[in-house]
Amino acid sequence: MDFVINSLPLYWEGALLTIRLTVFGAALAFVLAVVVGTLGTMRNKAARAVAMVYTEVFRGVAALVLLFWFGNSLQEITGFRLETEFAAILALGLNVGAYGAEVVRSSINAVPRAQTEASIALNMTWWRRTRLVVFPQAWAQMLPTFGNLVIELMKATAIVSLIGLTDLTKVADDFRASAVADTFTVYSVALVGYFLFAQVLIVLVRLLERRANRKLGRPTDDSLLGLLRPPSIGTTTGGAR
Amino acid sequence: MEPGNEPLIKFDKVVKKFGDNVVLDGLDLDVNAGERVTLIGPSGSGKTTILRLLMTLEHVNGGTIWVGGKPFSHMYRGDQLVPANEKYLREHRKTIGMVFQQFNLFPNMTVRKNVTEGPVHSLGVPKEEASERAVELLEMVGLADKIDAHPTQLSGGQQQRVAIARALAMRPEILLLDEVTSALDPELVAGVLDVLREIARGTDITMLCVTHEMGFARDVSDRVFMFDAGRIAESGPPEQIFGDPREDRTKSFLKAVLEHE
Image (cartoon, rainbow over all chains, first blue to last red; front, side):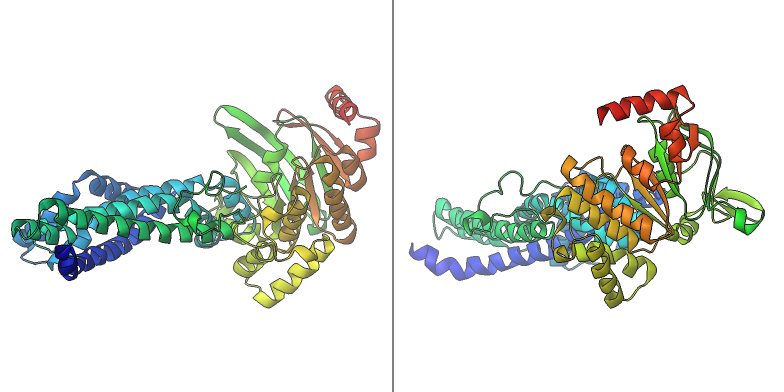
């Protein structure tokens, strides 16, 4: 127990990097997902091609190899060295963004065609229609899957020690290597840390889901406990009535 | 042609296909300014397609649609008629409004927003003005007290009346009504039809209605078009179509519909 209490500051330092990578990685993934996912819904062939190439390339490569590539290989061909932490954010964001783009694309396509037709009848431009009518409705549908993806991203940050970053996993591993405590304890602390972060992320996404559903005039479970359990059937189903 | 005699809407040999299914087969149709026209006929006879072509939700496969003496489905490039591009359509469909069978209100907006977003974003009407107009229109349809409600909190009939207010907020010259009472519970139909009668009485908007409400068709129409298999089987004033139909197809259709009522 003494070990746990004494080592917490070091764990926390590693955890801060894990959090930073999660926040910036998720921000990058989100922007990519929205932009590329929207391109994928356009009638313009070039836009769709760009979306497809990005999605297939970055969904199809291992995040770990992408990490090595940005961390090491890029320097060899361009002579330009990315800061290691930036390389990690880039690798994770590009990878998860590709999954997110598919979520955005399918959610936008799931908004009933009738909604688009109503906005054409009001003579809205593509941009206004997407921003005011289609995206806000698709948003409620994206959120549950975005919740999964951001947790996946958070857990994927555990690979960054392989390009020399000291995150939560690396701190635990260093404790094991220096044999200051048994392996059961050092990794258990890390496991609990990841679990707690995941819970925080889930609660944040559920809060966003509630807000989105309320805006669509759907019933929401407003209890505190409702933030920790999956919403009941009928509160998150997408599409307009 | 004299400007005064020119029809407001003119379908010239319009063809519309969905795959191999020919929905409109060389249709000619004229509607004059201010006229109230009802389209009746069996499902799949092409009535709704006519409205959807006018709202530019579908595009013709042949022939041309003219509105206000100008090409509508097409535009001039030099002196050639080519299919209209999005920019041209945006400029020319401003004068047309549509109310849908399933209302299609925006669920992410309050009633007020539903009614003001079109004028504010498409016509550049100042927000204040659009909001005042929304209040007026909602009063007309009897829903002023629901202005801050969400569409999901309204009954079908109320949603449809909001949808009518939303279409009128664009100050259309032509109003397209696509089976606007078909999705409603029977007791809600009358309220919606009353609003439409009110519009027919109080404005000079050109109206094209696809409807199965024969009583309403008889009351408001100047002309009734009986459709069958993508062609006009018969057309004329409502007294003639309902009182003394000439075509067997019209007779059998009316018999089936009126028996049901």
